[in-house]
Every structure is written in structure tokens, then in C-alpha cells.
Image 1 (cartoon, one colour):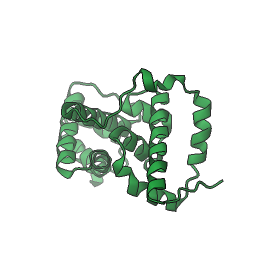
Image 2 (tube, helix red, strand yellow):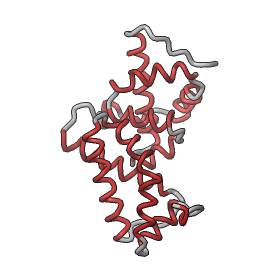
Image 3 (cartoon, one colour):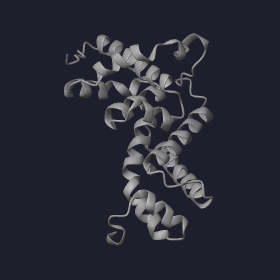
Length: 199
């Protein structure tokens, strides 16, 4: 809407809190496509994604109306964090066996962050063909691993941002990426696809 041209998402949220319902309509139209794409990528089912999308916006409205949002300049992060929590609640309700939760056998705090960061500096140099191959194999990954790969490679988010949005430590985010890469390399080997990093 032209009346909201130049108005940030954060300002729209606060206008809605102040009683301007058209501001919320504009906010929804700006964010719905990106948010639905994220949800769909994680859950891989259109009907479930629809339900999660609806529930996410119900929670957004409720939180806005209860004054649980302040303009931090990160409305999209706040929105994605709510969606992430709704997705994780849905998975827990399904008792989905694919979610790998940290335990004593895979404690990621024992991993030195510096070593992992060196590994991921290399992975940032993945070429376009590798990304296409990776995309084909990602549907087989567990949801938390698929989510971190999506956020890192397709949304270009830092591990700090990913950790903040998904409510886990940076080490856990790095660990999920590490396991995702291990799984992707294993699948690539099984399907004879070369994952070549640019040096």
C-alpha cells in the first residue's frame, strides 16, 4: 500500500499495536511469502505448512496485542523465531523420531568452535552446482539440520543469527550444520554426486 511506503516492518508492527489494522495487513503482505517458504522448506508438507503459518500469525497477533514486541530493528528475526517455535512444538507433538536432540553422546560443547569455524569458512565457497545438488538431497535430512542449512546457505544468515532465531547455542547450530554436511556427503557418495568445494 502506498500509504505505508517507506515505513519499516518494525514501525508497522507498532502502528498495529496502536490500533491500525491496515498496518497489520501491510505487514502480512510483506512477510507472508518469505515466512511460508521457510516453513514449507522445514516441514515439506503444504497442509502442515499452512497450519503452522496460521498458528504463527495467531501467536504474532497475540504477542503484539499483549505488548510483547518492542522495535529492535529485527522484526523478521522475531517472526522467524516464533515460526521456528511453532514448528518445533508441532514436531514434539508428532513425537517425530527424526529430531536429534543433544545428549551425552553428541555433546557439542566438547567441540572447539575455532576448528568448526575453519571448516565452515571453506563451505561458504561452495559453487552453484554443488548448491543445486545439495538442494536435491536436503529433503532427506532431519528437520533441525535442514533448517540450519536453509538459513545458512539460502537466507545467508550467520551462525550467531541462526542460534538466536532457533533458540540454541552457536555450538549446537554449528554442530547441526556439521552433521548436515556429513549426511549430505554420505548421500552424495551413495548417489555418486561430486560435492567439490572451491579452494
